[in-house]
Length: 356
Image 1 (cartoon, rainbow, N blue to C red):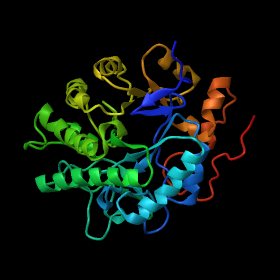
Image 2: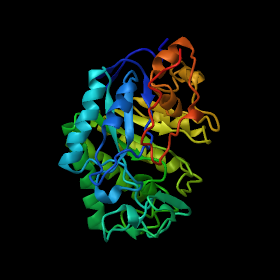
Image 3: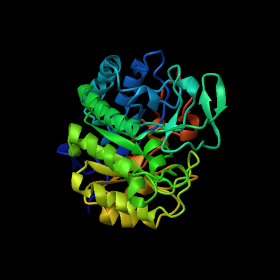
Image 4: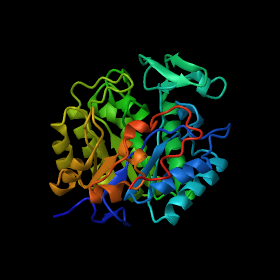
């Protein structure tokens, strides 16, 4: 029987176990250059016993930023700074993928260079507010991307992926979930286009297919993962019947020999085994456990074949040596004692002194 603590080959790289540290926004790239800091290198190196670390979302271009103090991968300085992070993880024997995240309509002009506004597939504003340095602000109506701007955005993703390899990452994960740009093209309430990037199932999956294909061509499919979250309502997304779109998307991507598919499971758990069945490669599952955090019982998803790898989020924040604790049955630090999403984390030490 395969267990979560058995090694696995991922895109030709041997991973020590099948436990993934899920991507989580940290907002620690302080300063005007949107560059990673030494604190980030420490944070990721502490968690290098994960089979695979997936970083916080990294914007592939200045326009892709939706939160304060998130890091980019579109300047030489950012590439050099990320190298300190990847070197730290590799010294500890870990593997790390960069999650490339364009937030699309989720953001605010105050977070972008002068004169820029958030963009999306259509000029449809999200309901709600976004955190800025001046406090929460209402989402604005995004600028609908033109065909030329869509092609430029696809190229931005590919260039950022090349930058990720230059920065020492083992690969990249494309963020197609949680209501950000790729997800916005997939969802019917955010994509009301009538051109080749909208209107039909084939049109709505086109942008995702183009981004994944361009990145796979740039750095090799075996270094590329894709994260999806069918039916996830986060960031004002509405996908009441996502099955057709996501099954079509996976069908189009199956031949690219990607490193993995990363499913952030929603409350409609009936879709999970269908996606698992049709996906030909490594299947990473971030299981739906709301309102609880993913715990030790998720290890059984490897044993029963539901997934090849299991992703942990909040529990990895509170327990940097999580694989050891899972293997021994605990004890676990309480994730509620950690601030794990957004905000200003200067001075937060990530439990460097571990309990027994």
